[in-house]
Image 1 (cartoon, protein in one colour):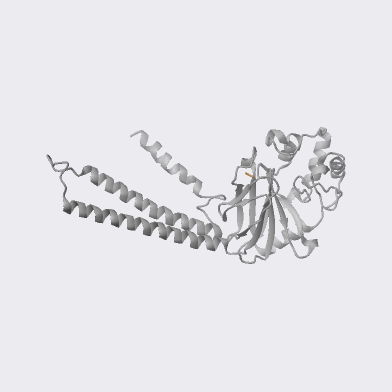
Image 2: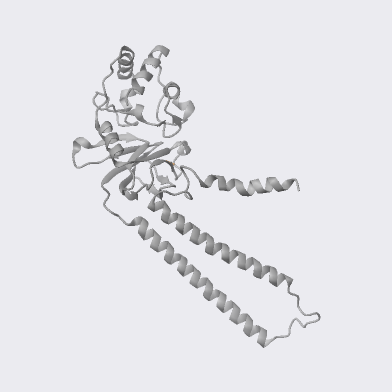
Length: 334
Ligand code: CUA
């Protein structure tokens, strides 16, 4: 009796993962929605087959042979019945497999259907973060950001998935099924969120030491809000206004930071690490590893290898006074 609550907990526990901002069973976009329907169809059919099989097994275990029956005797009537049953089951299996294949094909076609999205975004997997480039026919309206993809709600957006090093996989369970980012190849994906909100995605292909720390956020917002966000991101970095930030800017431009990072509107043009032009406006640091707070930003700069061992960001020597100024400068890049 004591064990019962534990048993119930164990049964219910896996279900607690079914809701939230990263769940294939709590979907808010047509792509993930199709997959969820397909999942429930498969689950229903396969569970039914399993239950019927188990019932047949139990029934056959409970049927007893007549006592003293001659094991070598043949019963033509029973043989005919057996052949009929097996034949019917084989036919049923074929029908079920064909039907599931048909469903699978139909839904996959829906997923791959390429509408022309109004917005095209190139998402490049890197060890271990996501480079996000917003394309536009007007070159002055293109810009690069990282680990955060803002989209207008209710509109299909075209994602071009690429990789710069190894195979990664882009997966936002609540919005879209997973598609690989493969070096030397471009995979196109259509992403749509039907409800405003923040959805979490995760690299779903083992890509090295920090594979688990390769998260991405999809932020779906009304069109007008999205446009104002985009205009703010297109703009170059605002110059440091107060003394503290000016000092931080100096620290940044005299340290190895500029070798790897870009800040548009300045001479920092490194392409190895994430673009920092508006880093202060992002919700997380290090690809979803840390919340973007002043303390975390300082910790990340001081010892990135402790937070994300193996990451390409090296240890640099920063004096504590300089660190404060540097953090103020970066934080102000909204
Ligand atoms: Cu990138 Cu796993």
